[in-house]
Amino acid sequence: MTREIVLDTETTGLSPASGDRLVEIGCVELINHIPTGQTFHVYINPQRSMPEEAFRVHGLSEEFLADKPLFKDVEADFRAFIGDATLIIHNAAFDMGFLNAELEKAGQRALPNVVIDTVQLARQKHPGARVSLDALCKTYGIDNSRRTLHGALLDSEILAEVYLELIGGKQVSLALIAESNVSGADAIAGRTIALPRPTSLPPRISQAEREAHAAFVAGLGPEALWASYDK
Image (cartoon, rainbow, N blue to C red; front, side):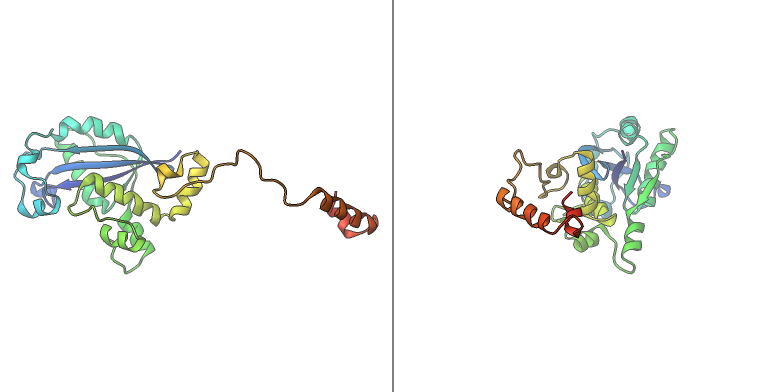
């Protein structure tokens, strides 16, 4: 079983070294590349002001975040959710930089998880093309109309769809659904997996036709090529 966590964050700015902080974490669980419906989502009080440029990106104000928990209060739940899963992140250096900076402030060790950066995957698959999340949604026909503002959980859900396309598309997921006995309707919107028929279809060759064929083969003699196919 392969467990992966698609992860995204929102922050007060671009650099934890300049005093910027996390304000939101969103995670989506994949088992064998199939969304399970299990998620982790939390808003975080950054204990600092919210720059206007950051607010325009995610819409999270100082007032909204004022009563939210501190990172140190959600760190254990976050670690418990991701466990030792591989992390799937778009522009991973940014999110991992903030997460590990927050962990250091909380007196905790850095995340040891393996990380897959979907920006790098996209650059390998589409050299020279734009690889922003919005651009990749357009490339793969993924509906991102809900993304009027950045949001960590929504972006993780969208990134999970993009990641599936980057590693091989729906065919990979459908094959894994069959192996893991997970419903396709639960894993891929609008897709279903055909179930076994409760009653087999009737044979398309009648008994009379079978008997006529057997008589024809017998008439060819024991050395005839057809005789070997009729055993």
